[in-house]
Length: 214
Ligand code: ADP
Ligand code: ZN
Image (cartoon, rainbow, N blue to C red; front, side):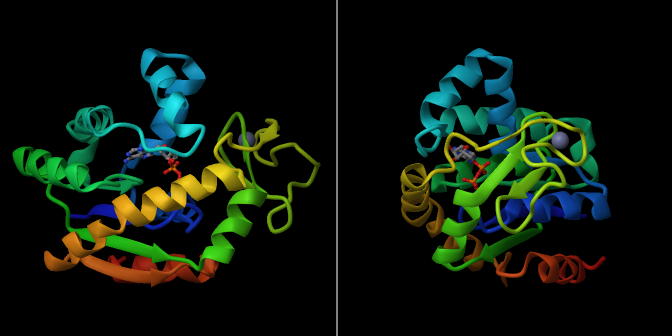
């Protein structure tokens, strides 16, 4: 059984690796960031609340985030394994995750940490563009679309995430160092943690799949 947590600073490539892993492993992708952005797009009460934190780089409060994940993890498709991307990000979230996964018999089996140098994170995030319609990622220098501003896959408009600017990124990196980094120790002590270098995205995917035994 593969019940995986994907960790790493913003821009490390969690989302990119997650998409490749779930395609190969055929397990659901649970991205709290994607779930919040979806709620924002739909204009739900959750979305309105989340937007007030996300847009300037702050974390959404633990109780809200934990409730959302608990609901998602108990769905039947997670019985065959799952990939958590961007959760947990705080010690209270990790503790709540431990309790909920024990309750439903879906305990974490692997924690993957993707480390990438800060200059590279800034370069990736500030140049990142995403498709408004399908979420496909692009980069103004590295991953250009065939037609400027238009998604190759679905023709949707390419936009910059409101939190992908240097100011919000600094807040996100600060939250990562203060609140998320302590989780590495939490999972290392449990013998679940494995670190990877995220500098080359293409080289990383086969390494991750080999590690997960695929
Ligand atoms: P990134 O890793 O690039 O910051 P995500 O898409 O994972 O991007 O998250 C975007 C934003 O969503 C975060 O900056 C935060 O505001 C919110 N968010 C996502 N996951 C969590 C979480 N587990 N706890 C609190 N806030 C979260
Ligand atoms: Zn698209």
